[in-house]
Image 1 (cartoon, helix red, strand yellow):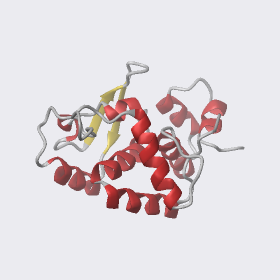
Image 2 (cartoon, helix red, strand yellow; image 1 turned 180 degrees about the horizontal axis):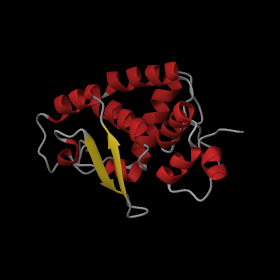
Image 3 (tube, one colour; image 1 turned 30 degrees about the vertical axis):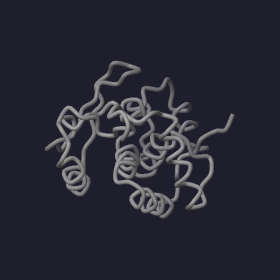
Length: 168
């Protein structure tokens, strides 16, 4: 089984965002919110338009833990979201399948990410890459593993460090 890594290089993140943006604003937004929120993919995919519409802070009840998770939206991200959702109904899923209108499936997200990652020379990418990338960069900025451990709801700081690919 392949171990999925965070994207450590900021330049690679930006290249990946460019590739995703060219193919679909939905895919770009999914990736961008994912690496800026630290949400589990299942929680990201369950977001609806009304959850992010005109918000500075987004709150999500985690499927896995039942805990309330909140994250900030930058003004730039808010502007992109506003443009993206302008023709959507507030009860629409934020990341819908074009065929069904239901959220895109985990396997589809995996394929989208891997296809884009190959184009920028990244490997070891999966659906957990979004969360791990968030954690890795949060840790680099703050060096606060305890807050991150709580955010990720993990049992010990060592588990969190291993999860985000930091070897002390």
